[in-house]
Length: 286
Image 1 (cartoon, helix red, strand yellow):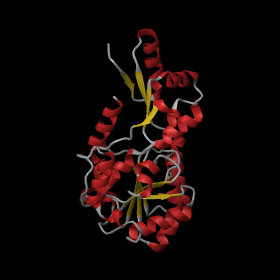
Image 2 (image 1 turned 90 degrees about the horizontal axis):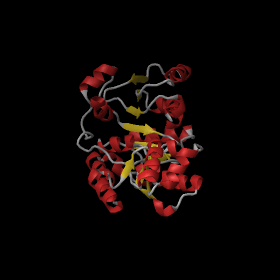
Image 3 (image 1 turned 30 degrees about the horizontal axis):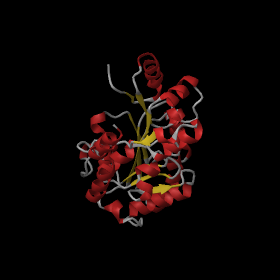
Image 4 (image 1 turned 135 degrees about the vertical axis):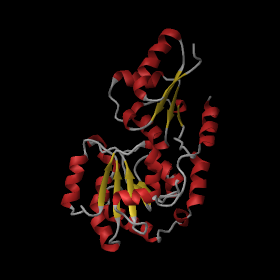
């Protein structure tokens, strides 16, 4: 028998709860974000309350769990996500992707990586589309790459047409995992002004590639971007603020010099969220 069960998603927790009741095996639950918020399923609620420890991926997720489920604060700790530092590294804009998307190396490229799901519109890609007309007025050659697929794609295409952005937005659809790092390298800024992200590993991947990164100031991106020290936090509902911040980042005038030092940016994100730090934090709980 195992000494400890760690369920890496809340939906597995009822099984661990049953094993604990029948066989006395302790279990921990990893809480990511939306799957653990606004929880009404009684089996999942019971599994959370019976867990010996809950590992929240961010302080934001921990705070929401404590507010919504009346859990014992001593049993809810933070274990931030980590990043595959060997895969996500700085590099020049890949020529094969520039050719694929009909872009040039000197173009300003904004990137978002997200599921295009009708249930995940909180990720903010529609806000970037709304901000693009303003951005184009100041940076005419800007291009937006939206990586991902899902049922929301038809609505997104409608937004692109409504804003007359057909010539400056590319929906890449699904990309193989092996191409993800090169897609971070092709951009000049990674932007996902979400307002419902539990943490956002994509932020760490972009930072590990040395890219300026923009997130929302209402969710787990606050933790991923270290309260704005590692990136830019904006009101995810403020189109003007999103546009202004992206223009400043692309022009190199945003007042955080760390954004423009790729190797130092990578060094700092790995010091905070690298695998060695993840191991150390987990070991302290074990």
